[in-house]
Image 1 (tube, rainbow, N blue to C red):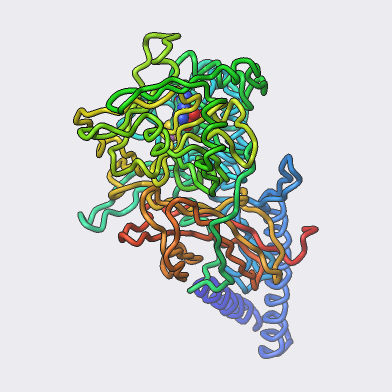
Image 2 (image 1 turned 180 degrees about the horizontal axis):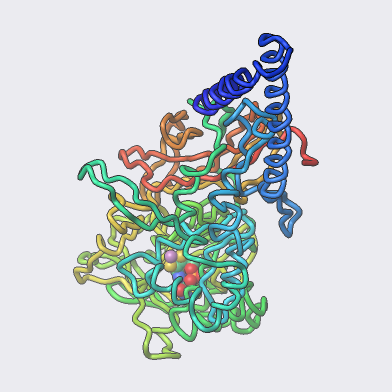
Length: 549
Ligand SMILES: Nc1nc2c(c(=O)[nH]1)N[C@H]1C(S)=C(S)[C@@H](COP(=O)(O)O)O[C@H]1N2
Ligand SMILES: [Mo]
C-alpha cells in the first residue's frame, strides 16, 4: 500500500510543475495558478478514486463469496470474506475479493461441484461402503477418502479421480461446470527450504486452501468452554455400518438392510438361529440363540453396558464409530457352559456365516480372526442394542463384540466360537488403528473428530457457538483434547483425567466469534500411552453479524 501512496504524491508534484511551467503566458499569478491547478488535480484524483472505488466495489460484489443454502436449510460460505486487508479505501474496507477474483476459490475444491460428498457416494452405481454417517452429522471431505484410497492401494486416489473426472462418462459434466486442473489442485513453485530450491508441486486445493486464502481469522490460544462425557449414545437404528460387502452373503445383508431395501430378517430365521461353541472346551455344544439367551438371562449372566464400536478404517472426520448400550452374553459364560476351556487353550476363533455355511466359496476375509485367552473378558455375544433386538444392518440376530478393539471382528450374524490350542497370530489380529503413508505411527489413532460443521457453516458474530465431536483411540485411553484456531500454532488443552477406553469420548467446545470473518478450528487428542493425533481434523465456520447478508 505504501508504494501506491508514494505514486500518487509523485503524480501530484509532476502535475504542479507542468502547470507552473505554462503560467508565464497568462496574467494570473504563478501562485494562484498553481493553487488552482493543484486543487483541480487533487479533485480529479479524488473523483478518479471514487470511480475506481465504484469499479472495485462492482468487482467485489460480482465476486463476493457464494452463500449457499444446503438441502437441510443450513447456510454456508465456503470462501472467507476479506474485511481487513486494505483499510485505505471504502471498497477494500467492505470486503475485497482476492480469494475469488484471483484464486477462483468458490469454484475449487470438491465442494464447488459436490454439495455433499456423502450424496455423491450414496448415488454411485457400484455401492461404495458407507463411510458417511448422517446420524452423527459427518461432513465428508477428501480427507476421509485418503485413508483407504492411499498410495499403496489398488484404488489409489489420484489415478482413480483423474480417471473418473476426465473419463468418458463424466468429462462432459466436469467441463460444463468449468472443471480444470485447478478445480481440484493447487499448482505452486513452492519452496523447498531444506534444498534451498524452488519445489514445484501439485497439491490438493482442499488440503492447502486455508493457508492460501485471505481472510481466515487466526485466534491465538483460542478460549472456550469445554465439557465431555462418555455416555452420549447412538440410537440403535443409527449405528454405523460400512457395508463392506466381503461376500455375496454380506451383500444380500446390505441389500436387505437400512442402506437399501430396509427390511428385516424373517422371524423364523431369527428364531432358528444357532450358536456353536466348539474346539478345545470340555463339551462342545450347539444351541438355538433363543434358548441360549433364555438360559443366560435366567442365570443373571447377561451384561448390559455402554460400549463403543469403532472401525479401523475410520479417518478423522469420519463416521465409523458408535457408542451404544449393548446387552450380551459374556464369552466366559459360554465357555463355562461348555465345561470350561481346556488347559492348553490359547484363544478363541470367531466363526462367520459364509464360512460355516458357505454360500460363496471365495470368502477368505480377515475378520475370521480371534483373540487370546487374556482378552476373553472383553468378548460378548451381543443380542440387543439400546434394549432392542438388532436390525439386519447391525447384525441380526446377534453380533460378536470385543471391547477395546477395532470393529473388524465384530462379526454380524455371529454363528459361534471355536476355542483353539493352536498358536495363532493374535497380536497381528488386534487391529487397533490405521497406519499409512508415513504420517507417523497411526493416521487415525487417536481419532479426534468435529461433527455437524459443513464447510463454511455460517454462525452469528458475538453469539456463543458450540462445536462438538468424538475422540477415540481403539485400545488406548484418550486423556487430553486440544483445540487450535491459528492453524496449529497454538493449542488450548483440556485434560480429561482417566477415561474409559471401552466408550468414546464425546466433547463440546463453546466459543464466541468476536468479529465477522472465517475461522478454522482444529482438534487433536492425546492418549495416556502418549500417542498424539497426526492428521488433525479441521473445519471452517463463517461468522456474520448480519445473518441476512
Ligand atoms: N458379517 C459381517 N460382519 C462384520 C463385517 C462384515 O463385513 N461382515 N465387517 C466388520 C467391520 S470391518 C466393521 S467396521 C463393522 C461394520 O462393517 P460392516 O457394515 O461391513 O459389517 O462390522 C464388522 N462386522
Ligand atoms: Mo472395520
